[in-house]
Length: 354
Image 1: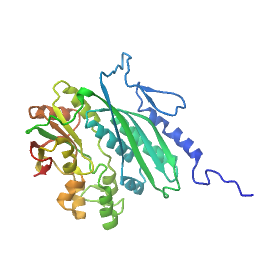
Image 2: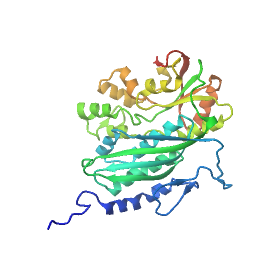
Image 3: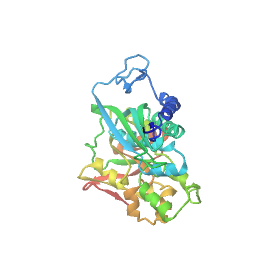
Image 4: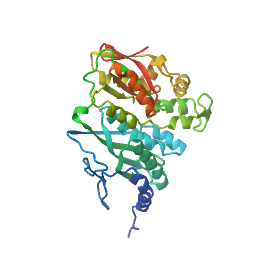
């Protein structure tokens, strides 16, 4: 008679999953506001769209739900090399909430999916702590998630992250870019570095070609290469939501763009249409040292740099020109570092960087 086999012998540890759930519970709960409905042992997360209680009253007249999903990409390889798993959790939230923000939507809740070769509760707790921090920065609830242990699909030490966000915007407050005109101003918000794009190229240059050690200090950067590469994506939710609320009646924000894969030249054309161009002036912002370092280390052509990376600008706002100064003043007050980058002109849907 064959010896009996267990799920754990096949590579899946149910007990480890139970320990992980206990570890992450506080990080999940700290993101919950009064609109989250707690149901013991529920199979799904519950969230109230309208909330009539006097202290936290928040209702919608004509709500549009906005949904986004994304991952972190091969930046997770850098996290594995560093043995640090928290910052990619922030990245995961940022990539979805910043995208929905472009349409003027306020994030409501977020769900994560974590797939691993072997479930290590402490590592998962680091990831969820980062996701929780990202949700707090985005003012949204971490409503639920899934952790899958799949030894037959992932090799030892491998994992992947995916995130799903839902937000809401009043229909009349949707930001669509339909009313952009010649002469409109382009404002950029500073990024924190590479954010979560271009890491296949970065890893090839740094670790395959130059054979850098992940903990190697880089004089030009003032930190190790690993620290520079793991810096998380900035979350722009609080600043942009406050800006849209300030100009609720005048609607001076005409379009926005989250600068992800494709850089400035690839993302801005998505919102300006086929009859307009955007002219950006490189002398209007300081490119962070990580980009110059990678360009020289490659070497990488400047055109390729602007096609792959954000070059220090993580978010773009296109606004009515007469409000440019007041908008930038407001953004500084809420902690941003805005730059006036250029103008909209007649064209064919391209970005010109001078």
